[in-house]
Image (spheres, rainbow, N blue to C red):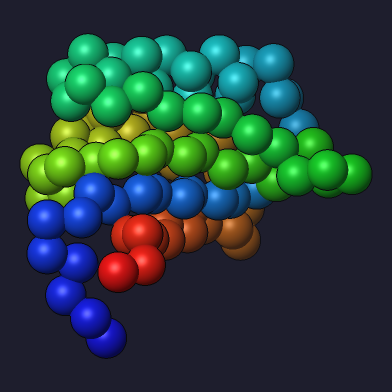
Length: 100
């Protein structure tokens, strides 16, 4: 494993949502807006082609991963996103950096 050094980190978070997609979409977008205000990092919300219950949040070019992850945790809790996740599922967080 290589050290990411000063390369920005990109976050990919995927999960399955319950059936009320309209409510869930509004809550996730509200969380992303609050997170952007707090960190300056705007997120994207996507759904899997052919499977609209599997979503992905993408956050690109995060300069301070520790601060971002702390803020993300606060906003997820504040917006009660755990209630949107399909039972038996979980939020999967992946971190990537550009290849050196």
